[in-house]
Length: 364
Image (cartoon, rainbow, N blue to C red; front, side, top):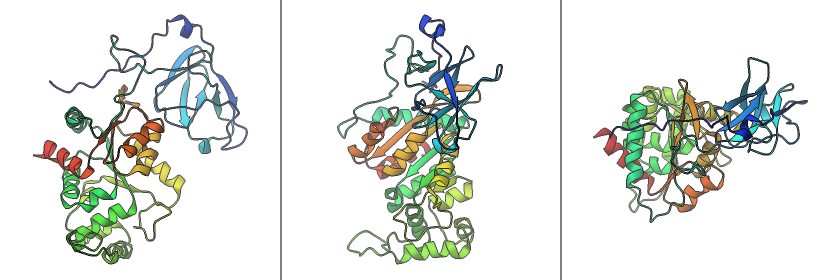
């Protein structure tokens, strides 16, 4: 059976409680970056706002943001904004309920069939190492084939485990070269480990992880080379890097966003040290993302999951944003759900095995 993208349907606005709901209450921002009191904080779920008698869907609802409304007659619209990006004069939606009584309505049944229960929007719940993930793999294969065929935008968040395994890093390289990945988020050391392997044939100074002592000599030599050449792109273009996902990303135009951390001792030139700048860069991709896969990078996973809407509008069509979080630890995959991103499919497995499975299914 061919993959079918779930179709979105709006709530029935002829229901009395929605038809008779008031318009939202708006208050203007007085000082940049400071919201009026009793602002309405959004989630990852679809939310509607009644403005001048019209219900307007926020197409990029995401965690811990506020709704800025345009109530000019005939131009009604909403924009979802982080608190720090509020500007004086912005009209912020005020209200703490989501049942329509204040002109705000959260709709969790948009992608469910009419015969299904409308009390949940979550794809999965309660994942553990005992869960069978074969159906999740099959669905993901179909999703990724669909994304490639329909100009989707796939973002991967990767931890160092991918770079530490030769087969895993080469599997990711093939996925990039075959058009299955459009953006990557990672830390500077994850990228540097991959480059180190591509230049020196070592990871953490080791050729093989057997009876060898870890050393960061080649890691920092790699970072220094990138800084000497002026950019990671220039380093790759020098011909020194023989293989790896960083080489593939640069050669294929797949953008890599590296957000700096307090632990960074020496970073690749492109590493973004300012946390707000890193957020902004990541968010530009999150807004375009139609499928996101988060691989054993818990802090980046939580950050990205919270800034990515569970649905979005692409070419005028509302569709779900597919989210997968993969880690060997149950704690790690469930942490994202604890933070409010309930629509992510969690898979408790080794990410190195996971990426190799994806590669075999799509590239063999």
